[in-house]
Image (cartoon, rainbow, N blue to C red; front, side):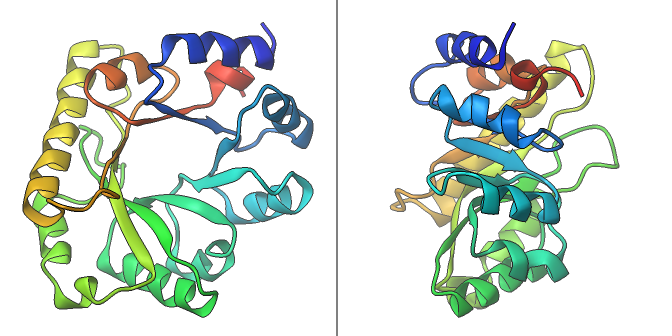
Length: 220
């Protein structure tokens, strides 16, 4: 099936409330243009140089989502082009984003990344470390970041029960933080979870953003 056909098929499956991020890392300009021509506007990248090259060459109404592990020394390069940073997993990174966003007069939406999978190799906060960050006066004083929700990646497994349990855990974390730290904040509304192999499970568990690559563009 074509990129157009893949996108149309996925959109038919997704409830209207769900935002679809087309994961375009390693994909060519022409492939992204094909997705763009079907109306796709949200694209996800995880390498800074690749993101900047594509930002320069592609239409400026694209919303670029940074979905990889963002190194602090690369923050300065991405804050002027991204619409959402999915993976904030430390106070240092949050602080660096705020500092660089202030310099370019932007407020950058971010998601707190949680470690919900069995694999140790994945990045992410615990509920305790997230609460520590959210309780800090320094965090409350930040004017150039907007914490808009949470993000997480499930264990890489074919066992849907394991995946469902992990996604439901992330949903519980979101609701706990919403109630405790963001009760009246309309912007704290996003749960980014679900990729090509598990997004239907994520949607049922409460996801608001899915990140789909191979199911749109084909396997690498």
